[in-house]
Image 1 (cartoon, rainbow, N blue to C red):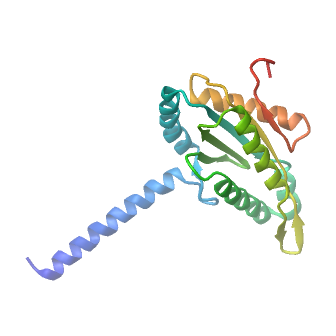
Image 2 (cartoon, rainbow, N blue to C red):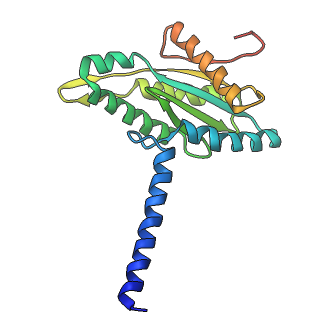
Image 3 (cartoon, rainbow, N blue to C red):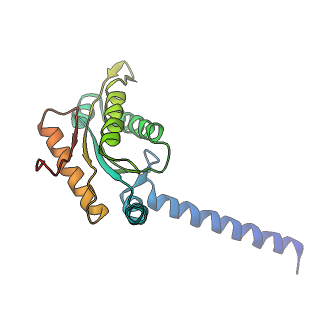
Length: 192
């Protein structure tokens, strides 16, 4: 064999492997925010969910939605909306450091699965996130944009991760209809 041909083939194979890895990553990440996407959340989250349930540890799932996001896009443009989404993803990454599964579900909606977090700790954790979001000031061009978020939270041990996401989405709806900029926790004893 020729040395040049050998090195050429090795380099081509390395490049092919890098391209495959890039494609795999693109399939599970949101391009704009860099967060994982819904597919990743359900694939990886379901495995972690089963493992944690077997161990008998608590799990919390929250849906986080930027309030009046359409108004930001309509008033300041889609580039401003993108800035808001990038900021939200940075806040989520910073606020949740260990073991959580964080994903952008679409639009201005994010989902977080916090492991080993019961109702009281989860309520405190997501209330501090809500306050952190509310305190942000986004300077975009010559404008100052302030945002808030509504959060629906489920800490019940439901049969599946999908069920917990559905319940947290229902709680998000209650947070929105209840005035926005709030955390609503599902409480099975009260029926809400």
